[in-house]
Length: 443
Length: 116
Image (tube, rainbow over all chains, first blue to last red; front, side):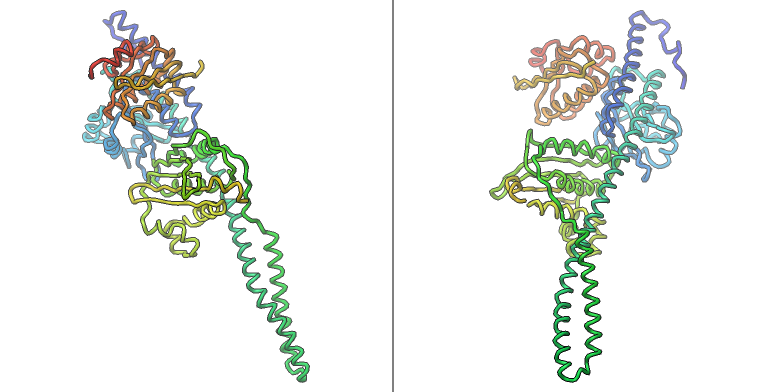
């Protein structure tokens, strides 16, 4: 690619044309400066995509742009944003950028004019891009790694992209690459931190379950043991009156029973020490601020996994008595499941509302995804698997049991429940429903 | 430069909803305008954007206008741009976007003009 030179300026041009060209170069330069400051603000992949694409479109004067990230595991593209190109066309185009094409494409940092891609993606691929009025394809690279691909449409003015334009686009791609890499690293940090805290909570839950189990076992064993020891004392008296022939045997039985009783005492002490009931702490909570903060908190981690988290609906104001910490625990279980069981590039929608249900007012948090949906037979067992202790079912649904079951348990403790609805191919919706009026008096 | 932008949506008149924009259109403020216009488009409202009060438009602001025009076109809903301020019209002319955007000197002309 040639460096900008006098050849880029028309030799026979009028003063007006030259001034216009200078103004256009100045516009490109200003656009680059704007992009460099704008990209310092957003730490979410989708926010960065919006910033970069709108800047580029305004920079070169096109209404068409697409941004894909690269899924390294599958060696193919994941759509992040598209403007001015129909969805089915975008899917068709992305089919040309996978496998070996991506490996070769990422070797160079320069944007391509579409015709120059013939060797890489074939004439059919070039034709597909041109049919959708795409003129430039640019790799997004950081630290030598191909992170994504941006395509830009033909300029509305009809002017071709010259060498200086390509330089400017390359500069924009460099800034975009750094911003995307930073966002991913930040998202990974935030997500790992959150998962550590969650793992800690899971350990506490398991500890609590163990404690309950020990307490139950303890009670079930101590009662018959107490009866056995009591009857041994009766038998001692009976045996003494008959000459004491059974005394050695009875002493053995009493000795072993007492050992067992002492063991159970120790177990009881142990379970009391590690006792940790599900604790709730109700406080006045602005739920609108809560859901906005929650969305902001989860955004980097969810974006880093190449899922888009969108806060869709919420009331203007809603202040209630509730336990925001435990509500957050439930939402985490629902969002984690949505991230885990939907493909890359999927959308997850959060919303908050109130409803009238059976003569009571309820708060509803909804987590909806546009993933593949849940099969009917899996849906029916979703919350039953853990309760039944059916290990095979848990494995079948891929470990959904503990997280969702814990979430439902928390919801039940707060007087509410979790509902799920889904159809294959149409995503899934999980609703956390909590009573609005009862919660204040419940605890 | 302060990132302030206000949008005022006026009630529908003669089939067009007027959205008056004032202030700066950049990466911070343009998404809000885009969101407002998308809601109107989803309700099948044709929109006139009054840009007389825009004192600065960044490239990202221009990009969002182009994206908006493309989305409305795709949805079969009308969008017109009226009373462009000097800041906006100079960029539009520089990039030769006049042929792509339906631009009118005043909001009244935008409202009464025949469909393109």
